[in-house]
Length: 401
Image (cartoon, rainbow, N blue to C red):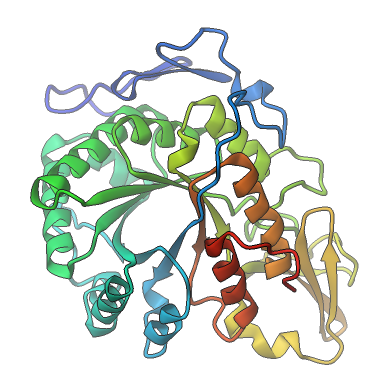
């Protein structure tokens, strides 16, 4: 929803063609080209699935591990679990702002992140030479329209985040803006740059990470943030399927249904817009989705909506008699057929085996590393911890289960 044009906000462009001027990007329907690059730069619509568009020599991959810890996983055992998890950066999720732009200290996320367990996570990580970010979220079209309509409101949010970073003693801020108008991409880029400048004025080594979606809008936001100086781009390489989708992997490399929207497609999108691979982290899921289905077969259609399936909350299902486990080699995901009375529940979730294939993709593309949503979901299943350690160390992951 386009707001009135006012002198205190970046211009919002509308219509079929959008000039993302503040980010230095030209965007048109069906394709993007960076200013200063040839006009015939690869079009998004033409990007072949799973094939990198970059033609430069392969880059040596990084092995950073960025793990988000949601506030609902911040409990009495999470700090001990994180001490055994070889993450280079932990993102404490999350704080947000209220209608005035101030950080909402009554919100559950703030209370968990800023509470004793959150502060213990920060102290433990930094003592081990790891980094910690505080994640800031702004969700919803109405909230984001209002935010990006007002430089004054943005300034209050920036000031609040600078204060929170200082209070918690963390190393940076992770920016997670979701459900945003395309025309606000320039304002988003400016906000990222403004936040980074303010953070570094107080703490010269402070960083900004942005989490961006797997589709065209997310890729444009990633490019805008990169040009604005974001230190890391966390590509959210999941939610290709949701509760309302037909069953399948949340993060497929290839799709059984023939659609092209998959991890390779998203990475190609990012490459087409020039998002720097050396600053890109491939985010992967430590969770799955479960649907009621018509049969125990892989790919069986659903009979209703699905739901998020978290491994640590379903440990008994993994050992339950009558549950059939099948590896779906098409989508690279584990499939469980769980008896449910006279019908079945199908679970599709990522295991160390399926994640290994996706971590190899990060290596082959020369990315900065990989990330996970969310640390804590894999508690009680040490093979995930072993996989993260192997990736972090650059060791072969071929022998992992």
